[in-house]
Length: 527
Image 1 (cartoon, rainbow, N blue to C red):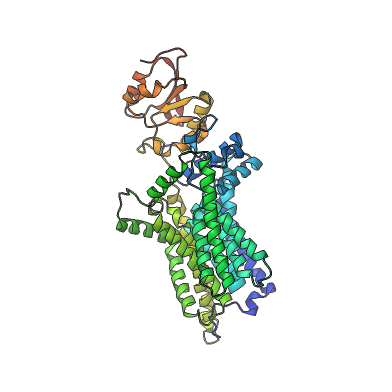
Image 2: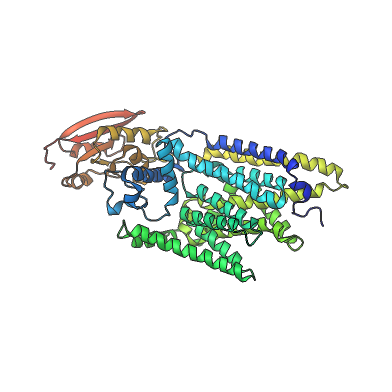
């Protein structure tokens, strides 16, 4: 047997020799936790925080309206008073993630750090599960390389704390892979049941879970054993049943849910997109390479070649990690190609490339160390052992250096003015303390990222009223209290003030930015 074969030998799997590698794993997890927990208490303001705001609002609505009453259907963009109207539901995503977020809020309170803790713990769990998965097949050294490469990517360092589905779905997929690999005895159904439960949880967390379950089903369909093919059929049946259950769930609270879901799917699949496939490929390809790290991709390519060359010499057990990596790459690529609009607008669409790239990259690093361990390469052995940690540190250092450039603040004004870091949170809290819960706030703020303000205000806000001619119709709505929050630095701000009806006006400065809060007179009749 070749010395560079990627199959764990007895020495690699010896428990007493595993503890140094496990200690290094603990160091990796602690270092990643420090990076992910940076500024964990800060208010929502960055590009990664837009999703956080809408899912935190869903959890907030679950707590105040009740999970049963809302049917566990998200209401991500309803910031006003109860009850939630039929049009206030967001029916495009599975419910497990906002339910977990709701549980976290119920236990620890509704805070930014509470919300961020959910994806952070999920990301750290992914590191741990990756280590155990690869250790079972290739030994603790290759497992530690996998954990290090995964944690060293800009994708994980930046998006590993994003309050969204991606970080939280991956642990279920990795747990399913571990369970599938460990089901040796056909009579012992515990691992099989764990694999099924993990796939169900992944599907109930993110749509990518369905792609993963389909990949697992294809694996079973390719087997000659009839029982294995039946397992593949069970996986497909579960996916169909969960989709049907979700459709039933959303239609009970939102009569137009199915039509909305179809429109959202068509939009995400690229209907009416202004970019060509060539532009899509250039943009998506560039950020996929950069966010996973070019060095990690090069190692992954080398590892894929090594695994392919040795696939006939190794047992099924030793081949499984590379096969699992191909599933994850295939499902993520299929998702990005099918929902090309989502991939074009969200860099985190490439999140699930990080784990398989780390697995294949670890195969290359482990193969290199096995090769230089040969007796005729004494000098190379020493050089190889010294170069390996240095290479990992360089990759991690380069990724960490990119983080400040990736932390982009979302503008709530016009994008041309430099905004203070916590303007959205401060303005939202001021609106909340100044207006009653049923008041609809009219403003001239940027509507693209308005949820950042609406979440802290917990009021319905109508944005983009930048011209005076827009205000009369907006204010004349009967039986709905109105108020105004006008940014005085906007070019047409004085025109807006001139058309406001009678009422109280208060000029305030929020971190140096001037605003006018308008309360209409109790019995005034505008215009």
